[in-house]
Length: 68
Image (cartoon, rainbow, N blue to C red; front, side):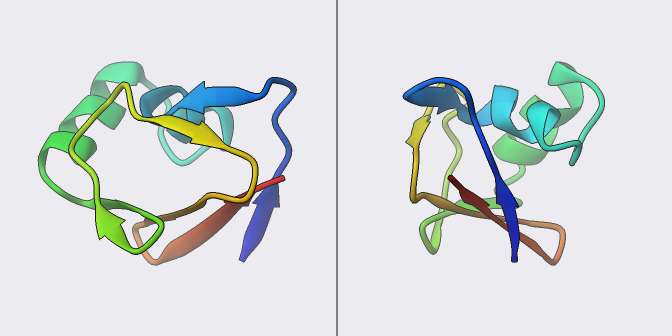
C-alpha cells in the first residue's frame, strides 16, 4: 500500500489519480473511472468528481493507495 499525502482536506478522484502518478492526463483518469476500473473504499466508483478525504483507500491497476 502506498501512502499519498494531500495538502488539502479533500481531493477529487480524477485529480487524485494524477496527483499520485497513476495516470498522466485527466482524460486518462476519466476513461478508467468510467470503465469501472477504480475502487474507492472497496467499491467501484464511476464518479470523477468523487470527493476523497484522508483515510480513504483507492485501488487502481493492482495498486492500493491510502490518502494521509
